[in-house]
Amino acid sequence: MTGIGPAGRRYSRGAIAFHWAIAILVILNLIFGLLHESLLEGLGVMPLHFEIGITVLVLSIGRLIWRLTHRVPPSPYHMAGWERVLSLAVHWIFYALIILMPLSGWAMMSGGPRPHQVNWFGLFDLPLLPVTGTFSGASHEFHEIFGIAMAVLVVIHIAAALRHQFILRDGVLGRMLPGVEPKHF
Ligand code: HEM
Picture 1 (tube, rainbow, N blue to C red):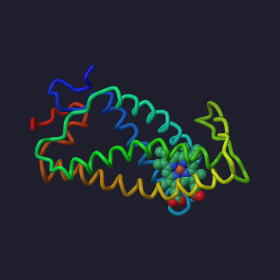
Picture 2 (picture 1 turned 180 degrees about the vertical axis):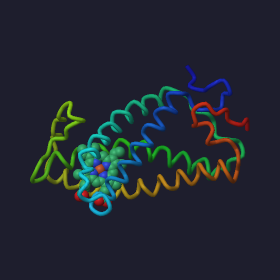
Picture 3 (picture 1 turned 45 degrees about the horizontal axis):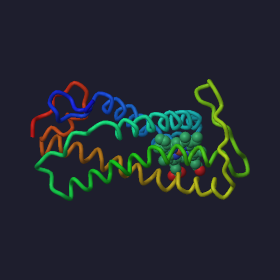
């Protein structure tokens, strides 16, 4: 299985499904995480933040396996070397973050003075991770710093997709959209 559709230049259906499911959930979680103490205070969004985060972790492991076992369409020929390197770097940093953000959240809840088990949509409790207080504290720091870094990367990633769509008009966005036949470049 190549993972490339008939045009040979678009992402496979599985890659598209993983991309959009994770994208929506990550954006929701960034909003909940960043605004739970200000705009969303009192709405009790954090249990949902934990549940969404754990869902992202499971989907991300599936996505990583998919990525490593399927080919991706090649970069368009007109992209400069630096653009290819930058886009590849951002994509792999995203792979790291969609796994490390939920794991660090889970680790921070598992240690410290008041360990707290995370419940997943009322179905089951996750076990506490075997972490020390220091590790849990470091995970908390990581979660906050990389949460902000991730929000910045999401904005850059969306800006790059919009540049391809509306300025370069090269069909790159269409490769990641369901049902859209991308241009041949
Ligand atoms: C896609 C996954 C996740 C993303 C993108 C994410 C993102 C964020 C962000 C941006 C913040 C705000 C950090 C700040 O205060 O500047 C935050 C806070 C928090 N997150 Fe997550 N998170 C994810 C998963 C999780 C998971 C799975 C858990 C726990 C099981 C978790 C627990 C928490 C907690 C407890 C806070 C509050 C920290 C505080 O206010 O001190 N997160 N998250």
